[in-house]
Amino acid sequence: MTAASPIKQLQETEAAHAAQLARARDAARAQQAAAARASVLSQQRADEAARLRVLESKLDDTAQALAAATAAQRAAAADIARRTQDLDALLPLALRLSLYPSETILAAHMPADQALEGLLVTHGLAAELARQVAELRRRQDEAAALAQTIAHTQKTLAAERAAQQAQAAALEQQVRAATGLAQADEDESGAAALAASLLAAKAADLRGAIAAMTKAQAEAAARAAQDAARAARENQAGAQKSARARQVALSRPAGPGLAGAPRVMPVAGRIVRAWGAPAEDGPATGVTFSTPPAAFVSSPCTGRVGFAAPFRSYGRLIIVECGGGYDFVLAGMDRLDAAVGAQVRAGEPVGRMPDFDPAKGGDRPGLYVELRRAGTAVDPMPFLKGKR
Image 1 (cartoon, rainbow, N blue to C red):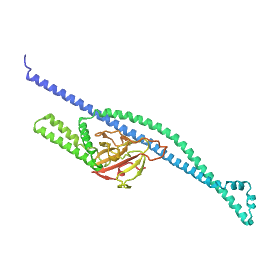
Image 2 (cartoon, one colour):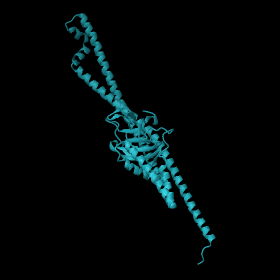
Image 3 (cartoon, rainbow, N blue to C red):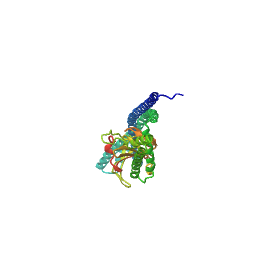
Image 4 (tube, rainbow, N blue to C red):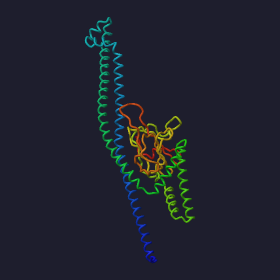
């Protein structure tokens, strides 16, 4: 069998190399297209959440108005009941005065000037009592009418919110499908973030959890650098390339930081405990929002999810690493929609609050928002959009 000529062998080698390069370019283009598509869907999801936030804010306003109307209605009814009880003993006299005012006063043995004064006072008192009762009844009727109006508005808003939720659910599925085609170095970064989150879960407090995450990720990047150096010394090109790719992925910033970043409110609702407000263990190191039922919670920054699990007394908690030493902490959710290692955009939903009936009284769910810079809690409100 005749051996292939050196020229032919070179041509075959060059063809194989060219085919390999073409496949690599195709794979790179496919990865870039998938990443671009995922980015577009992520932005659409954030935009959808912003539109949904408008409905949730309206629902929150409606719930607050309903609570106020209900309280006013109950207060009016209680006031009327109290006044009615006070007047029960005077009803016979009031009835007689309304029918025979002059005869009733003149029947009593008293000087004429006192009888006239009593008649005038009685007329004035009766008129004042009648005015108060009429005012209370008017308030009660207004509260009842307002409650009916709000109940109708709630149904409308609930239908609109359900439609928005359906659209958000469809977008979530598309984002998950696109995420599966993400670049391999993101998988390395995500694996490191997951390992770091497991260590963070063992921490005693939030400061310790963030410190554990930061340390674990730095150690993972250092190990990748060591692996790359060792592979270079041993002339293992494939291992060296893999280790360097892992090193690049692990040393990449989690996010762009907060300087000049768009400001996003994490949830619709109202502040019920501000930064620095008195708390059981000292001044509050975060901000607590009361929220509408089943409200979506959005990431306040663009970055990477470093932790997503129940944590101590905080309940279900997410830590978003924003870059630049900043970490946003969101706690108190009923459901988490972002996995550890996932890249999230500012405004993109990462969880959902508990559902409840806003027509009923009682405590409302609260979202706790804390911002830490290099592990130290700072006031998050300057980095959030507006105040309610």
